[in-house]
Figure 1: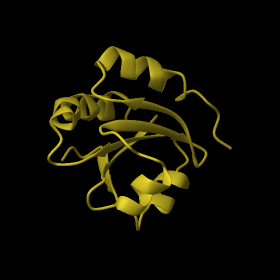
Figure 2 (figure 1 turned 90 degrees about the vertical axis):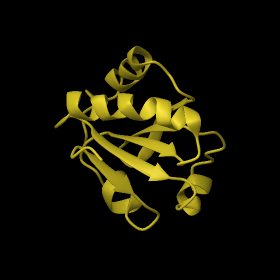
Figure 3 (figure 1 turned 135 degrees about the horizontal axis):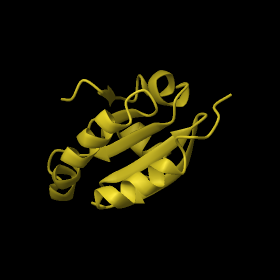
Figure 4 (figure 1 turned 135 degrees about the vertical axis):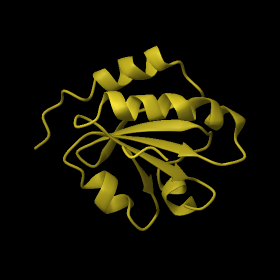
Length: 113
């Protein structure tokens, strides 16, 4: 996996995502999901492009069901954007890179307290 992408789990979600000083893009995915595999290279590109401005994490919903249930993830891929410990936006399905960048750009310049 890309060096700019962390693996999120039920155990580290609070620390890595909710307590992050940076906005976080979380890719909720599963290995059997075809659209998840389609969006994965885009998520990797975004992790490089936004390095230092946005944290990027991947959470396998099959292995981390508690977090997926907690955030009502019913379809994958779901890309959630977290700011100050709250999911402030989400994109469901394999969206094009331009759409993802537009969503991210709405949140990366938010001042984090």
